[in-house]
Length: 232
Image 1: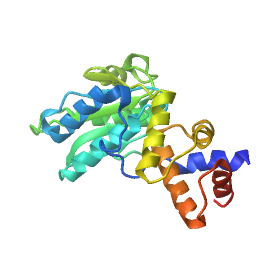
Image 2 (image 1 turned 90 degrees about the horizontal axis):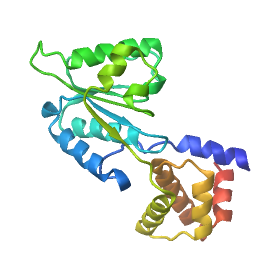
Image 3 (image 1 turned 90 degrees about the vertical axis):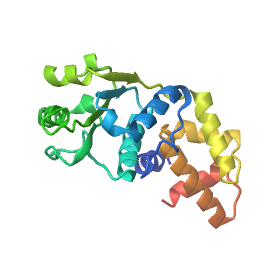
Image 4 (image 1 turned 120 degrees about the vertical axis):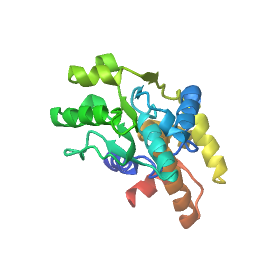
């Protein structure tokens, strides 16, 4: 029983299109407001920006929300994370470069990241780009080559805080209500202790649970949730 539960948590992942609208800011409201404002005027946001925080603090969601905001404005951006073994070379058509999981970069990824950083801020074409990055520690503590590490800490640095258990519980309950059903404390406890704690994953779990309950015409209980997992 335990194995499929863990697997489901891994399979859900983040929502496919993270935005500022579907980000639950909590204690990070001021940071989110500032990033959303800058994302609307990327040409004026050329000071590098670095986000750091622990697991489920929302770093990846916010970076992707910025990329999505730029896309809606007709601007493209470069994206790099630790899973990309061969990141692309810098592209002059980009309006921003976005680098996630910096604390995990290999030497090759660090070389590409440094090239992105230098080219993005170059003034040769009178079009400097916005550099955004994120990691799980402050820039000074990143296990990276010195020239890249110091550059990542050169501009705006924001620490993100994960939601408290009470805030996470309130968000899950509120989102269930918005979908037209309520969750018992038992179901909520089960979800928050047995699944990925990032809200993107929990929201997708709610969607799956809602759909399964409608299909089976059953009340949402821990038993129903377990049965759903067994059919995955």
